[in-house]
Length: 240
Image: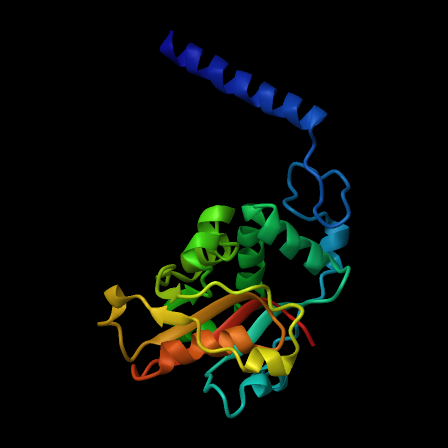
C-alpha cells in the first residue's frame, strides 16, 4: 500500500514537471530557442559556436605576458575568448547579474573537459576566487564565481576556500578605466586571518573575465607576498 502511494507520488511529480516544461520550456541562454530535456544552458548550435581558447604552451604565454615583471605565475589560462555580443558575453552577463548559477556549473564542466590534459589540474592544492566586497555581495545575494568554483572543486577533488581573500574597499566598476588608471589602483585585498597557517601552497585564483589583469594582479600579489605561495590563474573568459 505504501509502495503504491510512493509510486503515484513520483508519477504525479513527473507529470507536473512535464506540464511545467510544456508551458514554460527551458530556453537556450545563447539564442533563446527551446532546449530539449537532455540539454542544459545552451543548445547544440550555440555550444558549437563557443570560442574555446586553444590549450598550448604558446597561448598560455600570451596571457602570462600581461603579468611579466608584475606577478610570478606558474600557469595562466582561460576557457573562452570574450567578445562583445558573443555567446560568452551573454552567458557571463546572465551569471553575473541574473543569478543564473547553473551557468557557473555548466562552465566548470566545460573547463574540466577542456583542461583535462592540462598540468594545472594536478598542480593545484586549493582554489580561491576574486571576492566581492561584503556589502556588495550582501546586496546582490551571491558571488557569480561561487557556483563555478564549487563545481570545479568537486570535479578536481581539491578544496575551495571562498573566504580566503577578503575585499577591503568598495570600488566602482573598472570597465570604463583605461590600463593606466587600473594600474594605479592600490591593493584592495587581504588574506583572511583564519588561513594564516596556510603557507607554501599552490593556489589557483579564479575570476570571470581577464581584460587588463589588474584585479587579478592585485589579488595575486596579496596571495604570494611573504607566504612563499605559488600562484596560477584560471578565468572563464579572456579578452584579447
